[in-house]
Length: 249
Image 1: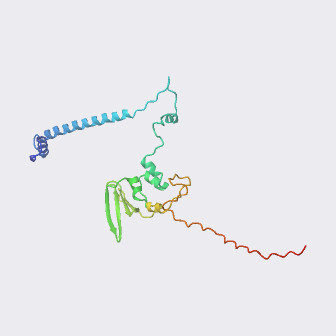
Image 2: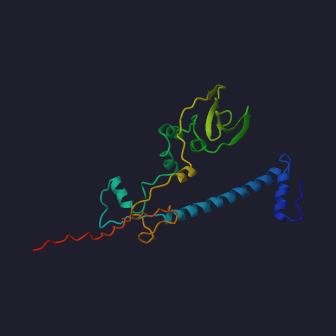
Image 3: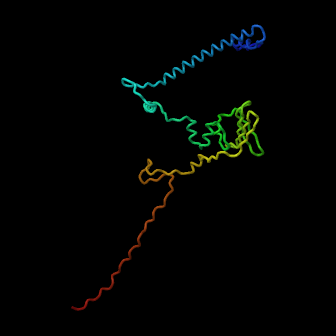
């Protein structure tokens, strides 16, 4: 028999004493039966509260379509058009939105919960979810991380990463067969990083709004040398020449 601490209440003490009873002793089964029934009753109350809460949420989300006099015959597309101001039928889930950004081969593999050599970590997470187990090992001078999916007596997959890329997929079958894939099955184009995007200047639209006055340059604009003014050389003064003598009339 276990004794409860002085700071615990009497209910915790009774519960601790009941759990410490040997099931083989007389009367122990009855104590466990009472405790089990109490727990079942508590679970039933919690389930009832959840159902009431879900019912309230469902009632908040009700949408009514009101028609004049009678309900016309509607096709599914016409019903969607009527409900489109309320519901966005074109929205995609996060998984669907992500699948639109990957190559078709990777998209099919993710839908079938498969891993291809050459995938990155994000793709494997979308395909298989978070791994229950991870191991970090070293093969010579190369450090790698292995994600393990599944447990015997089912198939077990060992997905090996070097950096962010899958370089090996090993599957242990139920019948003991081992399948190893190391040949690259998908080539991913390197995605531009944030630094690369910042290095590439974006052209400024000609009609972009600005607070500068007409003729005022940007603060970071390179100063431009003023246009040199061409000054014409001065015209030399014309000296009067000798006046020819006029003959007698």
